Length: 66
Image 1 (cartoon, rainbow, N blue to C red):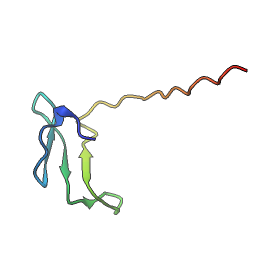
Image 2: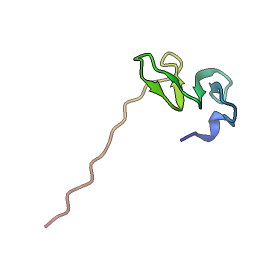
Image 3: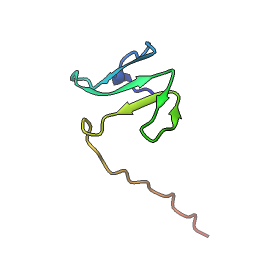
Image 4: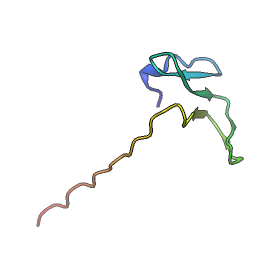
């Protein structure tokens, strides 16, 4: 899902920029081949050298008590 800071993204393809204006990735609604060779539609790519990586912690729901 597109986040508000990503801009309109109403063209077939374009840049994804952070609020400061730096390019962090690109998109192409008509699809594109991934580096692994798989065709992906829509194609959304974030440059890993342009974004901070953060660990995600997923909490499991507590088991109901008997």
